[in-house]
Image: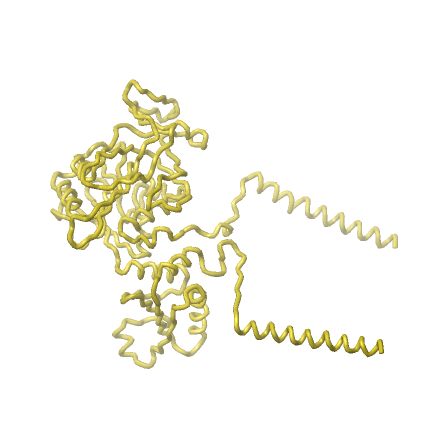
Length: 451
């Protein structure tokens, strides 16, 4: 009897095991769960791609013109499946380009596997299949059309396509991938800002602007145009007082310095580090530290009917330094109240908005920053400078849905160790580990001889 119960117990265990395996197999066909434990989900979609997909509030159709022969269709479908897992209403459709060559020539399809993305009546073409290219194309679809950003040129301004340290080519090259098109604006050839311009950028001119150029910029602002004004303290007024009056701001004299920068390891007090930001739609949720090499403080005059929100603010240890600063000993400065220097905290950037004077626009926006170096090629990689610059441009263009899209990279793709850690690792692998293995081998051999 006991033997029979043991046999039944074994059969019952085998039956339950088969039922469990069958249940797991059935559930596996009905439900899917994917886990990616790499930093920021490296093998799945990045946080930036997920954030962009979350901003798409309607269906997206992707048409791939790929031949059915070979594995290209399977590769495209497998790659885009990661997007479909996040956005189920993203549809993929394949078209055989061999069926209608005349139609393909009409569409301009010249690459096997070329993609056309459709969203809300707009489309984007792709000939490269990568996450960055697909996500940037989706970001351009959110914008709807390419945004025209006109950079004032001809007076020593930072160039949007320049590769010099003072230029802004790196930032504008990255923004071009998401639908911003930078064009030069020279008032030597034009007397007004061209129609269709979405944003004008006045990036740190070093020479006085002609009176006609100033009048054109003031007229552009008075007519409802969006403006980004980067103002460096060393460049002086340059005849731009009428523009400052139109924006309702005032540039304070002197250079803004921070006496508490030494505690952060900053030798030059003119270099401001900002880690906390006033409540502002541009910096909402922004937690990265930014650096500003040389700053002019700004103040509001209240003119123009603007709603001004402080964007960047110095610390309580800061002040506006009126005296010349010795570059050999920049920290040898002191706050001089008798000279009329302004004590911090002081604002050095404002986000301005008001009801647009233009009948075809709802809102007008402007940003004035007392520093232009932080967006230059030389300083764009400092902390969150690039991310802040992207937020400023998106806000000025009215693309609020793209302001909070993260652009941080995966943190564990690069191993960062200092020289001391490198020495320890080298000694460990080259000396300690071989000696340890030799000792273990000797111990095993000695125990075997004793046995």
